[in-house]
Length: 43
Image 1 (cartoon, rainbow, N blue to C red):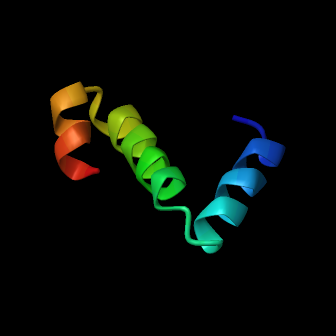
Image 2 (cartoon, helix red, strand yellow):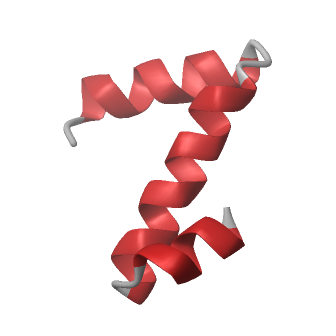
């Protein structure tokens, strides 16, 4: 993910886009755990 994509996600989250927030949290959780079920639980 490049800086422009990160800026777009942050802007969406700040505008109240819950789906953008949930997607970001899920992606981070998946990268950290390497486990789809765990990432789903954390998100």
